[in-house]
Image (cartoon, rainbow, N blue to C red; front, side):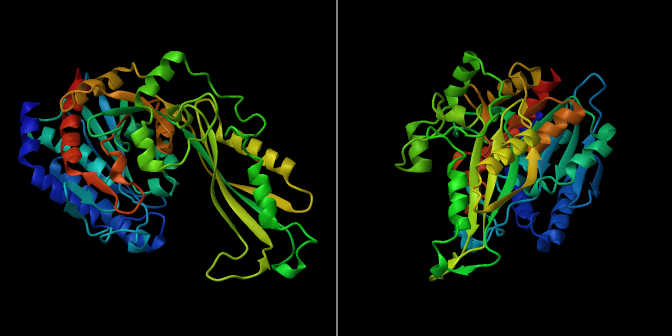
Amino acid sequence: MKDALAYTAANREKFLNELLAWLSIPSVSTDQAFKDDCQRAAEWCADNMRAMGLENVAVLPTGGHPVVYGDWLHAGADKPTVLVYGHYDVQPAVMEDGWTHPPFEPIVRDGKIYARGATDDKGLVMCQLKAMEALLATGGAPVNVKYLIEGEEESGSQNLQRFISNNLDKLKADICLISDTGMKSASEPLLIYGLRGLVTMELTVSGPKHDLHSGIGGILHNPAQALCEIIAKLHNPDGSVNVAGFYDDVQPVSDEERAMLNLSNYSRQDWEERMGDLPEWGEAGYTMIERTSIRPTLEINGIAGGYAGEGFKTVIGATARAKISCRLVPNQDPFKIFELVKAEIERITPPTVRSTIKLHDTGYPAITPTDHPAARAAVEAFKYHWETPALFARMGGSIPVVAEFQKQLNLPVILMGFGLPDSAAHGPDESFHVEMYDKGIDTLVVYFHELAK
């Protein structure tokens, strides 16, 4: 292990330059205009994996953007096999979003790498790859590894479920390791042991056959107003979700687990940095960290209707739409929740308009016990660079593939990420601290050795 860590220390500049090169490829999976760039990013990743000594490297078709696979299986049959997952695709990014520098011209400024994908997820994938490069360059890895780097995570992993189903033997492993998460702060490492599931849907409220002059208002129910009335009824005054049966399958969480979670609760400084002087809001009886981890939610992600352009147009729109998402906790089924929300909306839709609701994406919640040996190994690995013991937390968001790995491959999933709260993933000026990049590589070198024990 010492030789591998010496290798990482001697190759910091090389590792940084490789990440900058990968970040310069605009691999936006949600826009077909970037299809060739996604292919180019996959090929770049495969070339890098071959150069560092991984074997059986291939860019494999999925029906959409390809996945990149590579492995090294020489640690021995008595050593665990680790499936490492990440993604090379990124969210869209343009200067008009508020970037101070072109998002696909990566730069290092004040100790941070600025580029789209810097922390989500190319930077963290490179932590995984460069840790393995250091091990392979200094005698070999202490565990067997398989890498699966996909290109559609940011567009819903539309083809990955089928790819996993068709390649169960190729992907067979003992542990799955993912670094698509972050830390509480630069001094407080974090291990995510639970992820919420997700169901997204679109509600359309329709009224007249076509848009009308607002002068005719007063004799029909404006679809935009009706939409707002429907949405307003989906929550109770205390912030809880007002949908019959919504909480029926939620598993109770022990007092011990709640106490553990609250060790990483939002501080007043955390709140003010993110929310300013807004007052707290949410389901009564739960702390902020509990509301965003062990409780399900229903959110309105967008509303459209009528005229919303520059100037003013006195029109009553024929339709109005809302995007709705629900984050789900263990034991909740996204398809069941969709049917419950659909039934509630149908019940409260005024007879003066019509409503339809369409299902978009689904993802199941996932959890790995905090006492699993692979999780305890991660706690030990973080000690190499951090004096503060790693905190355990559930994440408010979703990584759909985690549930797929658990369901199809029966794998415990360990989430070790190194992004910080100021990394602005998905936002303008996304970044990754160079210090965290370096520490992440070292920590993963140590982690592979801890797993071998």
